[in-house]
Length: 312
Image 1 (cartoon, rainbow, N blue to C red):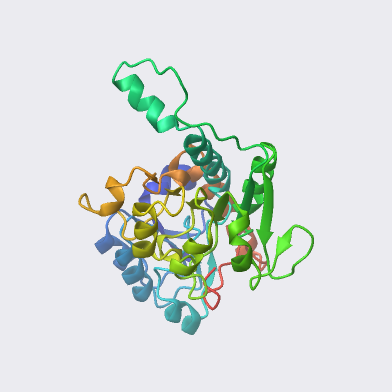
Image 2 (image 1 turned 90 degrees about the vertical axis):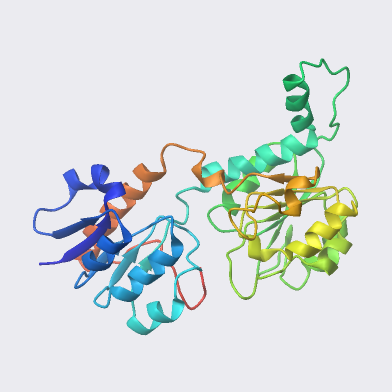
C-alpha cells in the first residue's frame, strides 16, 4: 500500500477526495512529521519553519515524490533531492495571479505617492495636490524572469501602456539576452525582479547595477531577497541615487524592527505578503495535488517539476 505523509493543515480539502487504498499519515507538528515520513513514498510537508521542512526531508529516506506549495525551494538540501532521485513538484503558478497584481499595485502606489495620501487621511488632512505625479503609461520596464509570474506581469503592465522589455536566453525583438541587460539599465523607469533564487541570480543587482539605473528608477523585487545586494541597495536609497524600491522580499525575513530599511521613506516593504493576498491558494494547491496523484499512480508525468540541479 502506498504511504503518504501530509500536513494536517490541508486535510479538510484533501481527505474526502483521497483514494481509499492509500496509507495516509496526517501530522501537525515537526515531531509528528518526522515519524509520519518514515517509510512514506509521497510527501507534502510544507511548514512555516523551513529548517523543520529540511529536517523532515532528511528523515524521509523512502520518499519518491515530494510536493510543495512553495515555488522557491532553495531552502531545502538540494544534495538530498539529487542523491535520492526524488521527483519534486512545486507551487509554480499557484500564486502567480496575486503576485502579478502586487507588482502593479506597488508600481501604482509609488507612481501616485499613495502612501502619503493614506498618511494624510490618517491625519485628517485634505491634500490640495497629489504627492505623486508619475504615470505608468509611456514608462519603460525591464522584466527579469519570465516564468509563471513574469508571464502574468507583462500583459498587466502592457494594459497600462507600459513598454515591457524581457530578459531571456534567446534574444529577439523586445527581448534582451542575459549579457545585454546591464548595459541598458539606464533606459528603464522600472526594474522588476521575478527570477528564481539560484547561485546565478544571487546579488545580481549590486552596486554596479544600481549605479547604472536612472536617478528616478524604481526597483521592484518579488523574487527573493538574495537577488539584491541589500547593503548596496540601502546605500543607494539613502543617497537617493535611485527613485525607490518596492520590496516584497528582504534578507532576512522577517526584517528585524531595527533594520535600516524600515526607516527609508523611499523603501516600500510589503513583508512577503504578495502570494498570501488571495483566498484560493490552498484550493488550487489541493486540486493540483489530486490531479498529480492520479497521474503518479498511473505512471504518468507530474507537473510542474522542480529541478534541484537548476534550483527552480
